[in-house]
Amino acid sequence: DAGVTQTPRHEVAEKGQTIILKCEPVSGHNDLFWYRQTKIQGLELLSYFRSKSLMEDGGAFKDRFKAEMLNSSFSTLKIQPTEPKDSAVYLCASSLSSNSYEQYFGPGTRLTVL
Amino acid sequence: QQQVRQSPQSLTVWEGETAILNCSYENSAFDYFPWYQQFPGEGPALLISILSVSDKKEDGRFTIFFNKREKKLSLHIADSQPGDSATYFCAARANYGNEKITFGAGTKLTIKP
Image (cartoon, rainbow over all chains, first blue to last red; front, side, top):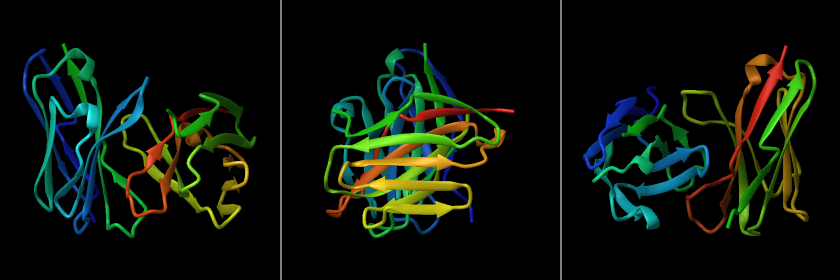
């Protein structure tokens, strides 16, 4: 079985650009999570979908971050406009269902905003 | 407010020794505690987990000790190997149907050969 796939693996953007990160969850998984990982803040939850419905939209991240789940096998995270402080690793994870505890993580996208 | 705390931030042990990573939490509703292992350039991967009804969970060289009364747990890595060098995240999830997992800040473990 394929794990969680994320593309691109690396992204470099100029300040003010719009970038879109992509994620394909494990086939058959119903829950999908977007996280941001930095050395200072650690793992921060950005968005959470259950069966394609947005359950959490990230609070402090709402204004420039928008996650969408277009179908059960594909999700995007749009950052618009990007700022240098958005430089981080963005991780996507999926889990089987609300009764399943384990989250499977993708390899992440390393974003650098100049 | 950090609900899951880990210590130390970084730890170095010699190959063959037992590495002990500590974790504590605030929320009494947490009942599931996974430990994730992350290598550079990869996403975290589930290593071992424990439910709050247990006080110990073993999987090969990895053991979780859990103290519900003190809201503390620890991950012991016996006979540590250089390949165990990674960052370890303690995490927790509540028992009221919310699927969000709260992660600690991580402990970076280095095993010296």
